[in-house]
Each structure stands twice: as structure tokens, then as C-alpha cells.
Image (cartoon, rainbow, N blue to C red; front, top):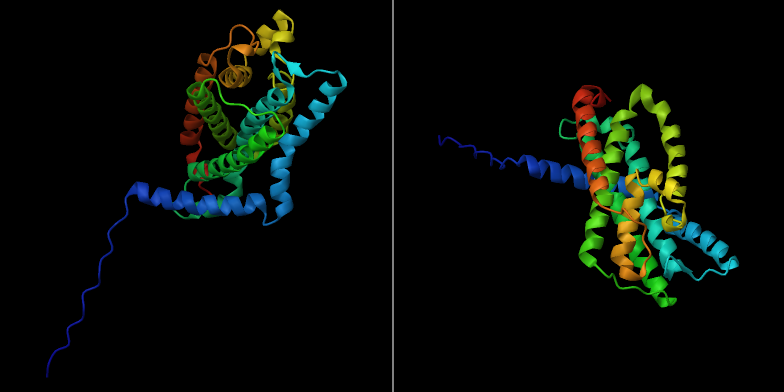
Amino acid sequence: MLSQTRPHPVSRPRRSAWGVMRDVLFALFLRELKTRLDGRWTTALWVIGEPLAGALLMLALYTLMRTREIAGVDTVLFLLSGQLSFMLLRSLVLRLMESIDANLGLFAYRQVRPVDAVLARAGVELAIFGGMALLILPGAAWAGHGLLPHDPLGLLLALLLLTLLGLAGGLLAAVGTHGALALLRPVLKMAFMPLYLGSGAIVPLAHLPQGLREWLLLSPLPHLIESIRIALFGPVYAAPQGISLTLPLVWTGLATLLALALLQLRGDRLQVA
């Protein structure tokens, strides 16, 4: 009798650590995107309409004051540049703050780590704001408020640093307010109101008293918003003195180091579903 030979099972090549992380991030990205938009067109419309609503409100106020230019540039472009920059940072910090708690059930899989949830949600926020900019800026240009960046490289650098600051702040908030410390989240959300008023997003810092301006410039946000405007508008923009990317870079580095230290310290607790 002829003996039947069994075929040897085909062994699949083992994926690298980067390949596993890439697949996990892509799956989490799709999950977060579906949750963020909630499958409703009204939700997507509000994502775009929220920054426009704030800009249009302030535009109406400046129109009543018969102000067509602020700090030497068009009022609409001044407000849009400030609104979008501030809302990107706020969205990154506040949305990433809840990313770990929203994905606790997935941490039972050893391939999924808390930092993956934070990075996936950050990717969703950046994709949404990128799409928002692609809709708002051409619309503003069609309405007669077009603009070509004076310093594209400087603009990219300022936007990159703004994104990294938001990512570091969001990771720090996600790890630092996890568990019993979740009571701090409403306080953090309310803290963005004075940050908004003092960021220069709606009121030019150059018009404020010098003493108050010096205190406001201790925050990295005004430096980033003003740097974005300087790169956009060039010499015609009346920027306040003392604007630099050095302070935001220091804040970003410190926030990143502190967030990673907390993540290492509380990593076991975060993995508990």
C-alpha cells in the first residue's frame, strides 16, 4: 500500500515590529475616523463649520467697527489663520486626552498599545484639519481673500512644531488624566478659554500693552500663531517683538519627555482593560 504523504504547511513570514505597528495604526485610524464622523454628514459639516463660525462672529464684530485690516493684513485672513491654528492645537490636546480611555478594550491584544491609540487619533485630527484647510482656503480665495505664503518653508516649520506640541500635550493629557485623575479633564478644557483670548488668534498682540504682552509671550501658543502669520504675510504684517520658535520647541521637548516618563511609569495600569 502506498503511503500518503501530507503536504508540509506553508510557513508565513513573520512580520516586523514596524509592520505590526503599521497595521495596528491603520486599523485604529479607520475605527477612529468612523467614530469621529459618526456616519453622519451633519457631523462632518460641523467639523468644518466650527472654525468658520468663530471667524465669522469676530469678522462681524470687526465689520461693525469698520476694520478692514488688522496689523496690516486682511481681517478675514488674520482671523482664519489664528482660528485654524488655535483649533488645531486645542483639538489635538482635548481629543487625544480621551483616546486611551476610548480604546481600553483593545489593549487586551498585546499588539495594541496605548501610544498607538493616541497616534491613530492624532492622524484622524490632522486628516480632518487638512481637509478643512483644503475647503476653507480656496473658498476664501474665491471670495477675494486669496493668499500665497511669503515663506513656505517657515510656514511648514511652524505648522510642524504646532502639531508636535499638540501631540505632546495630548499624550501628556491622556496619560496624566487617566483613571482617578479624570476629574482634571474639565479643568483642562476650561483652561483653553483664557489661552484662546491670550493667544493672539482674534486680537493682535502688537496692540496690547507691553507688560501684558510679555506675560502672554511666556506661552508657546502666541509664538506659534505669530510665526505662522509672519510666514504667511511677510513684512506687511505688524508682528510683536520677541517672536521666536525657540520657546515652543522647549515646551514641546519638555512635554514630550514628561509624557513619555508618565507613560513608562503608568504603562501597566494603562494596559488594564
